[in-house]
Image 1 (cartoon, rainbow, N blue to C red):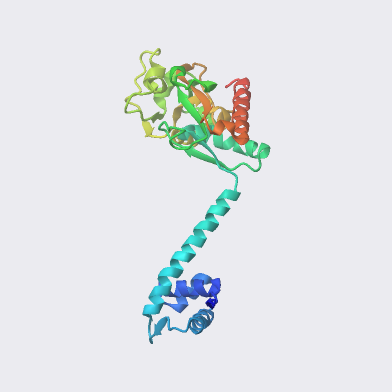
Image 2 (tube, rainbow, N blue to C red):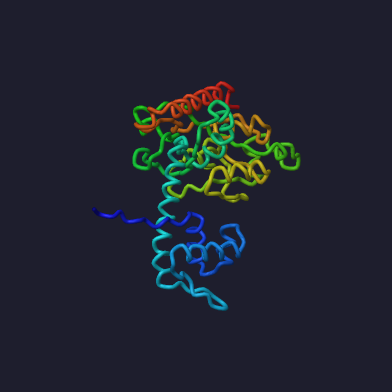
Length: 313
């Protein structure tokens, strides 16, 4: 009859955590600080572990600790076991949380239109976990695992299943204080020569309809190149400069509409130019099946309709 082998009792998790931290730092004091316990508590844990295993794990020297051969063996195993336990706990924690709803759009749209309105969506869907991935490059939803895209493009380049949100108009905007300053009137486009013009850099010339040269083209005799100017590589930075009264910018509806309603910006002239592009919303194939994604798209469409019904001026 074969005798069953008696298994040695396993050390407690606290003993292994204390040992692993002490072995990693080669210091009871640093291990204690990491684990939020006293140095003497770590020392007692290590001593109890050595007694339980019947081996010495550390050579205790006056100024440092050195792992014994047995200590090295246990450290390799303990660190790997603790790492696997942490990984499993993180996986289980992530599995228990709702999947994040990831939205990609341009930096300007995120900053000036979407983020200021997100509180309203959170009220409708308080449990939704929303992640905004603002990027001025076009991202592939399927490849980069995005759920929703709000894309600024021509209708020809919009995906077949995309829904149009709104178009875009271009017109000058500035801070109200700039308009009230009688020393530099701003009643006619010709008055722009007395003001700092805020420019959005477009080195590739991809958006010629959104620059001052194009906007002023029907108004001959205005030489804006010799006047004072500030240049920016991001639209939201330029608009913030306009809000701060640093000059006149070319605003783009719907991105500046909210700031105009709030009285932070004004449009001194009625003349507007129409952009050939518009804003479209669409979802990835897999995300379309998720109810929170459908709720988000429906909310964006309602907000866009409400925005356009406000008149845009």
